[in-house]
Length: 394
Ligand SMILES: *[C@@H]1O[C@H](CO)[C@@H](O)[C@H](O)[C@H]1NC(C)=O
Ligand SMILES: *[C@@H]1O[C@H](CO)[C@@H](O)[C@H](O)[C@H]1NC(C)=O
Ligand SMILES: *[C@@H]1O[C@H](CO)[C@@H](O)[C@H](O)[C@H]1NC(C)=O
Ligand SMILES: *[C@@H]1O[C@H](CO)[C@@H](O)[C@H](O)[C@H]1NC(C)=O
Image (cartoon, rainbow, N blue to C red):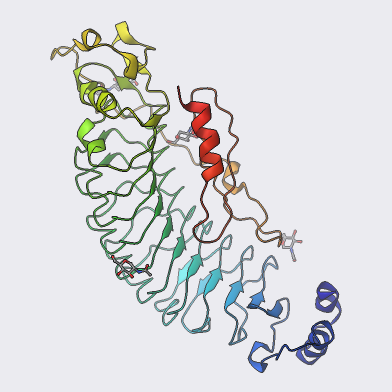
């Protein structure tokens, strides 16, 4: 019925009539939800302007002033500037557009904004230190697949409410010092599918509530013993499909809440450089971990690090250095079309990134039976984790 309204009636007055027919009872249809821009569908509960998938080249203006949710995904929007969105906006979906110009102040004054999805905008210009400043209510920020090469150190300053930060599938080679300093409420940080090579001490400083840190499918060759310092709530850490020959046991010792660890798909060099990791596993028996298969030395190739004995780890001589420092052969090619793997959002048929966080990138014969996670705040992957746990433990 609503669809009929949309396709047959365009004018705002007709809209009003249509809605009064549809919703004859108590709904006081505030005039500020009109006019609804053409090609959009507006509805009052919750106040929404839904304008997705219409090849729109710009943000319709004006949008209804009372709209709390604004859906503009899957269009061809290339430019954002100040004044386009009502200060009341709390959910703003702009994913899968062509944003290539972000004028200063594009998100200024959106003090009620809780969710901002800019994902899959491959021409997104470099983010400025103040791009998100003032978004003090922001809980969820999506910046996946935006071809981001670097982030300004102050980008997330003042985002004290942020809980979910999605930066996966970009071209980040490093993280500036103090980047996460203000994010004490962040619970999920997705950084997989970037080009990170090392994690220096204090990389995640400030993230005292972080529960889930995904760093798989990067180019990591080294991780500082103090890289994860301060992550006192972290339960899930994914490091699979990197280039780590070793991992300091001390880096994991600073994670008192850790439960799920994935280390497969790394060239583990099981000599004394892996000894501290081996020791950490010994001292932390309750951890669920994917396989840690030795690549070298030749005598231990194919063996599982965790099941090695003390006597196996005697190769602690200087003439057998770990294979670090040679990054040739790790050439990166742009990601294939699986980029756009999507799933309908709220039945509206939009393509959005739904992470297959569990089955992705394993080297041990697991199925890629990922779990779509339900959008929204605070819904976790409990079921999927249980499956994953069963699959890989042992
Ligand atoms: C959007 O553009 C594409 C190609 O340019 C076309 O196939 C599609 O039908 C258009 N969609 C709408 C809703 O106009
Ligand atoms: C964020 O965390 C701080 C403490 O670090 C707390 O005082 C504040 O209420 C939290 N804000 C939200 C929105 O959860
Ligand atoms: C790095 O490894 C490649 C083969 O993967 C080899 O051809 C090259 O000589 C190595 N470079 C150095 C500096 O060891
Ligand atoms: C591993 O990571 C590379 C990028 O570093 C990516 O291209 C590849 O698809 C990943 N492989 C798996 C199995 O996840």
